[in-house]
Length: 335
Image 1: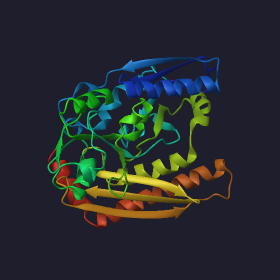
Image 2 (image 1 turned 90 degrees about the horizontal axis):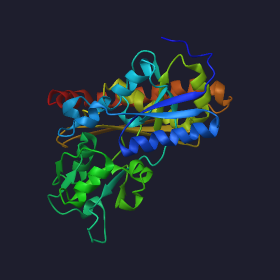
Image 3 (image 1 turned 180 degrees about the vertical axis):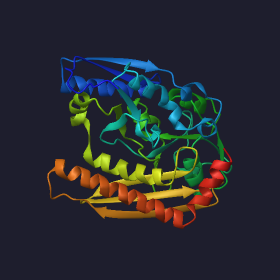
């Protein structure tokens, strides 16, 4: 692999998917790079990934969310791009050799949003307000499993495509409601379409949901130094705990796993959930750890990341003790 550590940065190429949300995210990072180094030339390299092309099947059936990043990673490895911008929830737990998630940006809204058709005139807009046997559009097993705990009568239908496409299908009455990530709706200017946010006690978010991450070559020290101001330590600690839990469970988007961490008064708290694909069971475990806030940020970062990852593994072990492996095995067997 080429050593990029000593080069002078004059140009930066960002690999991105072509969807409106992915382009918004790449353009956001482009603008942040211009703010950090006004003289640098930044170009986008829009790409169609396999995950964008296969729209007639749930992700769990065709290989998972890794299908959204593979082509971007190849562009990083062969030098066509310098960085790739991702929704962190789409990034597989294991990265190709030579690449790393060097930057985790400050988390936006982490929650899921319930969206009713635009022509819907009902005054209330909560999960509880859906009629008996309503059809909800979502291909997420995580969402289906958790929602079934509250409303076992609901029916679920596959929902794929970009945000605009999903909203169009909803407004054409293909579904009674759909569920989307609130952060994506807000980023694209669709905040007014959020009928209600789904409380985490009902639906815990996906691992990494709401946070943008930047993947880059591990040997590219110049770019790491340039982008370091975009790295948000508290978000990185939360995401590290969530991803460590998911990694320990050998999880992905193919199975109903949820994980969400928050920092309150120097304490990192994590809750994790694993469910049965038919919604009949939902296992929950949680934990907390006090972070080291006595040292400088630079000195405490590695120690706190280790604490976060250990917490993630602890919660994963708690879920496995409750029987998570059997549920996960069943989910994988039905792919």
